[in-house]
Amino acid sequence: MLHRILVVEDDQDIRETLVEVLTDLGFAVASAADGLEALAQLREPEDAWCMVLLDLMMPHMDGREFRVEQLRDPALARIPVVIVSAVADVTTVANELGVDAHVTKPVTVTKLVEAVERYCPRSRRLQPA
Image 1 (cartoon, rainbow, N blue to C red):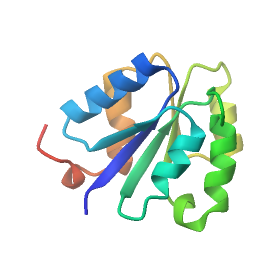
Image 2: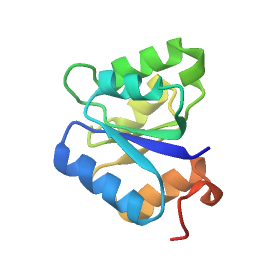
Image 3: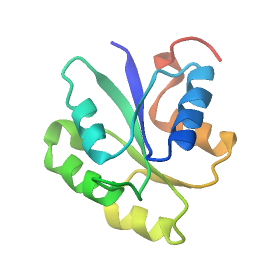
Image 4: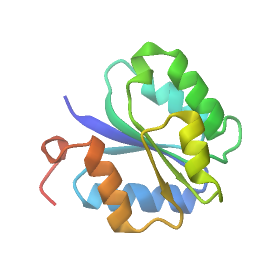
């Protein structure tokens, strides 16, 4: 079964860039524009997820609300979450939400890859990078 990364970001340009970079590196990637869309995708029974890259500030359901809902669902609670945000207190928020890690925007490819490879082993990539 292919394990994918879910990029949850409301800014279309940022979302598409993250997806493109990760896809070019050989990862299987899907995306969502907000927390509601993300939860719907994570609950698809035929999909397997190795991690979620989560923005905090989004319409409809922000990153904080997403995290609360994710933790309420035992099947989703085990999926690692890495916050990708420009908020000044991202470390504090990451600790409050109990996420696995955080990366500050603007994110460098190096920092992104470090975070992703921690939760999505190379063996789960589509192809060698």
